[in-house]
Length: 184
Image (tube, rainbow, N blue to C red; front, side):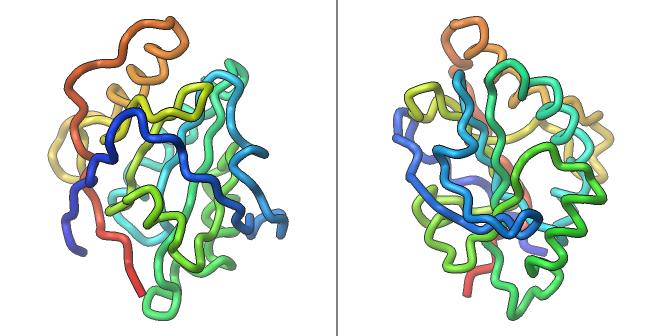
């Protein structure tokens, strides 16, 4: 496990478009298929990363609280499955079902989407407004495995709340930290 921070894509960046397979449904999913009317949260996650496993329950809670409010959620796994077979699509299906993901969990086999988003770690979070302009990128909250800070989703929740209340985003946005994306 290599501790890696987010690269912090510039705010205002337009969400790169994509079309990826959803192993759970075996359907190709486009960004336009799952984006929210008000905002879209894109998360780079995987099956084996201890940082993602640690946050999975909170990701599901936050998504379930906001999907009906017009916030879309999309999770993407871009890891190399040759060297990390625990991140293969068949394992993604298991992870999505075990965690009751209420959002599509897409496989970025070519890793082009991760590169387009300048994703660096799992988890890595991006929030785009209704025009698909980046308004937040960074951490879920300050909790990490073993640091004894409770998981609250504070930073991601605040970003979503700012959009819902139509108020400016927080100025300080802290990078997410986790396992590096497993590049080919």
